[in-house]
Length: 60
Image (cartoon, rainbow, N blue to C red):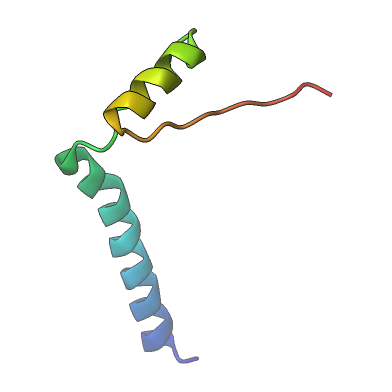
């Protein structure tokens, strides 16, 4: 690859990365609510048709 092509690809990657960080702020898609009551949150999401994100982990 020549130097111009590499710098062009790098510029595109940087622009896309910045867009991925900035656009959700304007669309309002960054609202995550953390709750200690996941069963209640799941039922509320199911009734309203909203998506739900479950995060879990294990200490092994």
